[in-house]
Length: 415
Image (cartoon, rainbow, N blue to C red; front, side):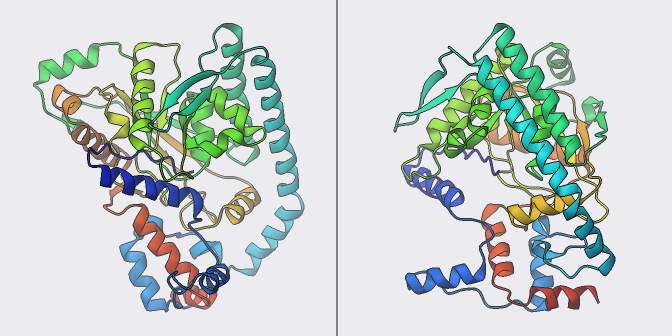
């Protein structure tokens, strides 16, 4: 899920370190069971020992430091907290009724869209481009035109929305926010220059979104059907692999430590420029935070989406909840999917900001462009700016996984 674009860095040591970071993210689960960690430590004594159990006071202190990843719903940390008897009964009923029905409908929708993509790509050759020093090949069908592309896009948007409906997102309110010039943080040119830029009917090259859940991708598919960054292994998955190629995904070789991030960023930059200049090209969907949060915070932005200097469309996603939070922050994937499907209704609210046209200074400085866009999204979405990132998320997860008495700790906090 973590579609992160690293900053370009001329320092080869930094590039190597960044490559190792993404490789680590692709191979090592963020939420690893303590028993599994203990087995790994016995097999390899060089690994650090399993984390010690966390006390209630230590957990409370960590939650203040790593607030962006803390779950605040009734299920508690990692979704393992003690829940009321009424909630347990609701889960049992949902497991016997809602979950099987939703799984059957969801798989049917996925297979149907795969068949549509298969028919539309018959007798067609995928577009191939080289990426990075290792010359890893990017394959996609986003270049298809005519009726094939129309069918892929329109059916993809409709079925993505149908899948969201199946998962309980029955109504998704969207707000189009109008901004005044004074609301834009990047006041780096005079008012006349900014007004001239805003009046140009330019197409954004990328959708910039905060990252809360894997559900984010389904929403954006139903809204603008963009391309996005994914692990290369996604392109080889049954059913999903062909769909991702029809989306025009940019694949990252996270399993290979020789991966060249400069090459990946270069491919993304070219795609953003192409989408900006060609209305028939799919826009890129970028999650510049690089990982998911609990939805109330905004992490530092990577600059990969802003190197092209093209206008971007900021979109803010919020997941209000009553019992279970759809945010994928500190909970395992399987548990999250099951609990999500057990909720009769899930909520998603969308705020679309106007297209952000960068000033000359922002085009020359991608970091400034990224920071100004981030400040704007935080102000308009009432999100808290946080300076932590993926390394801190791993620390927090490691502490949770090392806690053998998580249930009792959570009870101490809530009593």
